[in-house]
Length: 279
Image (cartoon, rainbow, N blue to C red; front, side, top):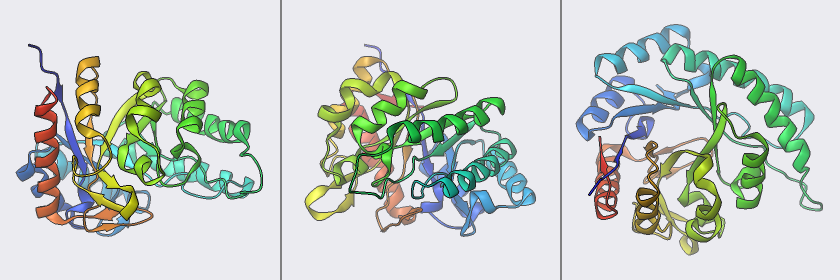
């Protein structure tokens, strides 16, 4: 029986802030590549050209690739002033991605803070359409994550974004733990529509009632069923570890190497049981 192979990568700043330690641990854990969110406690958008060149060289020398720049673009409230600021951040993310040898940039969608009225759906789409055009002109692919309480964290809003903007320069990164913490579920609220738009799966699990992040299969993310269906459908995109097992913050998280390794092992175990394997 055919068993699809998946690339397993990870946000390695959850292992250590030090790039050399990040990459050495990634090799020990057996990752296919890394996702760059920060190095030396500096956000990827603020790394110097020399920092980026060194990180790219270290990663290449270790036989790994940089899969995604994990930018914080659009992790802000919805406003005209922020729209201009985030467009400039995106341009910095594009420069970082180019220096690191990747075309993928993780982004978000703004937070709608006015709870007294319906979100400005067309305004949200227009905000992102402008960014997609900039990414497209640079040969980049924006990967939208359903994080926290930002607009696209809600299934109906994310579906609206994908219907309007999906293409070579815009697709979806799905995080099951994020949706659990908002009270939604993978199988009912996301899986029926998202697979055609899906680029990347971010891997962590959660227990809603406790507001707690846990290893894959230990929470309510429906990972065994989710991965079994993904395998059945023949989807073979990247599985990106983002365990958040020690700290889960607004702009990142931390696990340490032992917990990160345990998270990788949990993923592999659930993946094999679902009929898949990894490269």
